[in-house]
Amino acid sequence: MMHTLQLTKSDGRALTLYSQRPLDAGLVAPSPFANPLHANPHLRWHPLRGEWVAYAAHRQDRTFQPPPEYNPLAPTRDPAFPTELPAGDWDVAVFDNRFPTLSAAAHDAPATIVPSMAARGQCEVVVFTQDANASLGALPLAQIELLLQVWGHRTEQLGARDDIVYVLPFENRGAEVGVTLSHPHGQIYAYPELPPVPARMQQQALQHFSQHGVGVLQALIEREQAEGARMLYDGPEAVAFVPVCARYPYEVWVATRQAVPRFTGLSDAQRLDLARALKTVLMKYEALWQRPFPYLMAWYQAPTDGLAHPEWHLHAQFYPPYRTRERLKYLAGTELGAGWFAMDALPEDKARELQAVQVEIE
Image 1 (cartoon, rainbow, N blue to C red):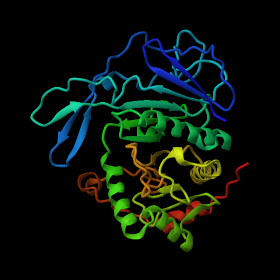
Image 2 (image 1 turned 135 degrees about the vertical axis):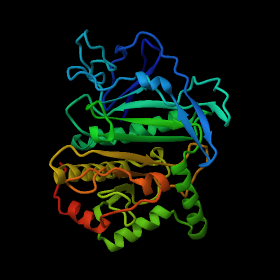
Image 3 (image 1 turned 180 degrees about the vertical axis):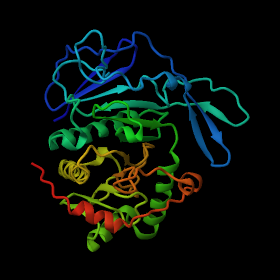
Image 4 (image 1 turned 45 degrees about the vertical axis):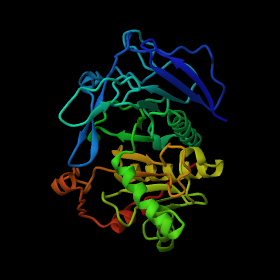
């Protein structure tokens, strides 16, 4: 059972605590900031790409590379270093980003020579655990299950708003991908329109579903299972594999076996096995590299527009930044400039490396 406690920080931002046990109603939400920021981001239309670009100049002043003794996510009682989180018995915390790219309070976008509008939406920080030295893959299965529930609850809460169309949980891990805080955490972006990547996914999924009566990812999963060459985890309710069409070395997808549109649709059995699949992949990453493995993990789910979306299939995609063990991979001209990815390694080769890594989940 998931327990929740809603709190408000002194600067007006919301904080929600989650736990597998009842929470102390007397907990108080701390904040390193006394006053609201009054962030006012806006969007400008990109006429050549046909998409919005967000502008949030206030983010130039956000927390960046703090001194080693200061982690604003860590629940410290040292008055010299104010914290974002309270002391107490809780498992996962979610709070409004102090420096959001999208904000419910955004208003009055500046006039430009292209269409512009207020960057309505929401940006939240999700703290996976109180243990600042842990990692997502090192958490117990029950904690990862709870996190999946938290993502579902945030999707439900944010998706109920009229100005929200899409909810994307993600984690940037490692200094190589720009993370400045080591405490295990991710973010949630709630968008006013369907972003380009999930919009393209929906277009493909709708076309496949209308032609075949089954989602495109579920059909791919069945083929991956039948072939088996790239499978990393094949459980009763969830799978993990290096996709045959991987654009990154060591790219991995984690999904339920049967299509579930959103986190909110997961059964208890699906959530447990999805947590096991996720932990298996993360443990393999760590064991293969013998170091904290940097990645971007993005969770794709159906839009929150009130429709059923049977064509959608909840899943995570991992984008590690490495090309080889010796050299970091950055996006090159064809990838950034054309959106056409060029791979120097076969998915089958990278799948074999990960398959060879033996992990045990207690």
